[in-house]
Length: 48
Image 1 (cartoon, helix red, strand yellow):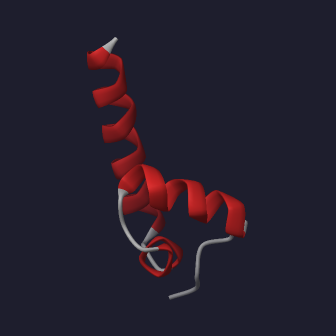
Image 2 (cartoon, one colour):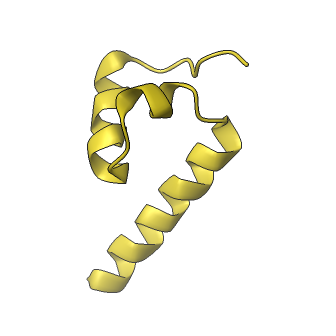
């Protein structure tokens, strides 16, 4: 599997938000990453 085509800065920000190592972010399948981002967004909307 190819690593995600994202910048190091983006990977670092995602790592902080998702609380997972950067290496795991870079090798995470794209559909799983998108699902986790959608879950983060849903949780952020609930808090507001």
